[in-house]
Image 1 (cartoon, rainbow, N blue to C red):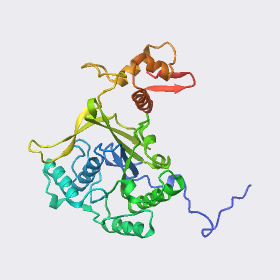
Image 2 (cartoon, rainbow, N blue to C red):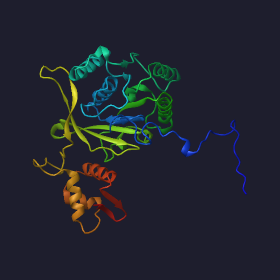
Image 3 (cartoon, rainbow, N blue to C red):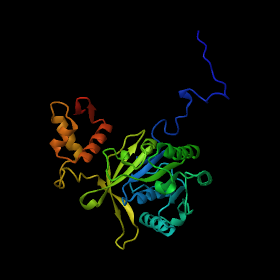
Image 4 (cartoon, one colour):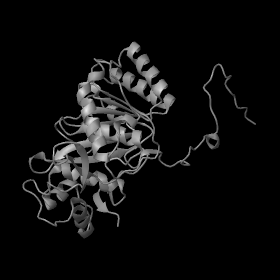
Amino acid sequence: MAVVSIAKPEAGLPTCRACAIDPGADDGAARWRIDQIWGDGVGILGGPPKCAKSWFGLDMAVSLASSTPLLGQFAVHDPGPTLIYLAEDALPQVRSRIDGICKHRHLDISSLDLHVITAPVVRLDQDADQKRLSTTVECIRPKLLLLDPLVRLHRLDENSSQDISALLGFLRELQRRCDVAIVVVHHMRKAVRSQLGQALRGSGDLHAWNDHGAYLTRTGPGGNCIRLTLEHRAAPSIEPIELRLASHPDGSATHLEVVGPASDHNNGDDGDPAPGAPSLHDRVLAVLKRASCPMSRSQLRQTLRINNNRLGEAIDSLQKQGRIRRDDSGLSATT
């Protein structure tokens, strides 16, 4: 019988059998902090400039700190204190934004367990500031840490995998050690790809690092609508939804609100869909179900006369749902 060599504790890494791992409170299911939006891991809130990324991040922080639903719809499962750092906003502006969200939700800001880092500069590529942030998180024990935006938190080369991976490694270690969900706001390139996480500016390590991704993009005539697209490492993603930045009639209480499922504002390369037209997802499925054999992406695009980026988004979404499949022969419907 072969003899199994076991490393001495001081020489080897600690191990245990798979059955001995604590599955957690949800017995292996996704552990949501905010239902279907964000779990207990790390991730990026991305989008081009002026897409309400900071508003969305603050809405998450207020939701967890107050135990009220995100955007009025997505339940909070693990409420508690939250910690935010908005590097590009003056403190009075941060207060004004939080005041507006609280007014909309009928919350008293003085009862809100939301903490704001007031340091003028935080550089997470420097050991001293990493230690300061770690100490702050250990003291407050927040359920969520919002860092906005990444570009103001370091002086590294974002295109260098070696440089950026060290910073991301620090945040991952902080998340695990302190059980804090971390949301990092980051910019996307103007050339948006079908998988939005791949459009994040800088190294591909940023997208690979994500447990959760929330991407905001402008859509519709004049870019007046905001589309929220979600991506999770270990859970299915809901369909994209459409948001808008709204205020009370007197201009106060500015907040994000859900308009509804994301509209297909670019069914064709030009113009808008007719009222009541089927969604792009439904149109893709209908074409593939009618086809006598698998279709290539270019054939599908020619048939639908659809913008290539939008078609890519629909294909990726339908694949994740298991409604279409892709192989060497092309795309086909599964049902």
